[in-house]
Length: 187
Image (cartoon, rainbow, N blue to C red):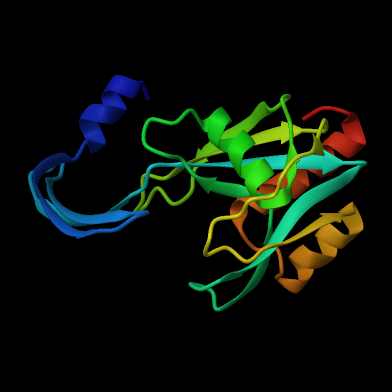
């Protein structure tokens, strides 16, 4: 089916938008929409400015941070990442977050992938960059971030996934991309 046909068949026209919440990181709105067959429905939508993350290898190991994630009520091990500032280029954000969170920096970041994290209810787009060229920088986490930095092996990464210590999509994607890189030399 062609893109134009798809758009006509399933397009939802917004009738109204009701703002519900506006925070530092997200906003929540409820849209009333007209469906293709004329019925109306509501859509709860989380608006997010987007984020950038880095799959950084240091001496053949993956740089990760461990931190407490309140929505999950547990510690998680993740690749460094953070929210885009208004109008910020994702590459700039990725470089900033790598250094702020891990204390390492790189001038050689390549886009690995970009994807929507939860398109059923949110517009957040996450950009993941890759580098295997890092050098010591200055760690400077946000005031409310308590992070532990670690460089992990593939075996540790796989064990952390199995144990649920790594359970977010961006880090799992990074681990599998890293595995592909180890096996083929390509991403």
